[in-house]
Image (cartoon, rainbow, N blue to C red; front, top):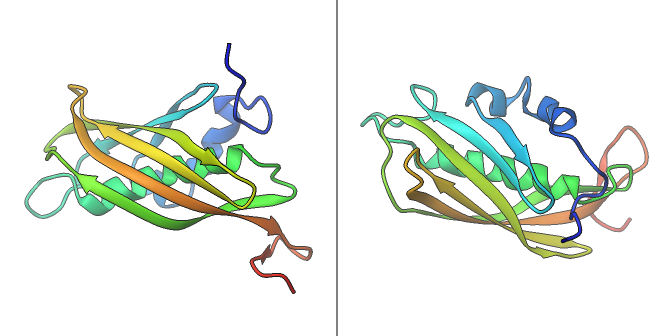
Length: 154
């Protein structure tokens, strides 16, 4: 049996509030599975996530992938000491989607002390690959004083 990658034994219900009252909620992104080594979510393909031609917007796919990867990255660190912030993202859009829902799965490629790299695969309702994404996050210490980030040694 593999060891869980998460900082603690989170339940999906503890993580779901991260998707409320922000862009994640606006796009209709929902977290659906929190397994020992990956996070899964869904996003509708509708008026909120399509471009003028009626296809899933590439930017919506990237926002979806970064949401899953960033949430997963932060679940791997002690939230009292560290926060993970997006540093670089690369997406390859492979197949158009006009309707339905897409599902994304975030899996770690590298979990280091100062950075993490995540692979996020997005598939359509027929399990066909729509987009592949690689997300790099920086792991930075939480500063003292109102939750400000300490991005540089001061």
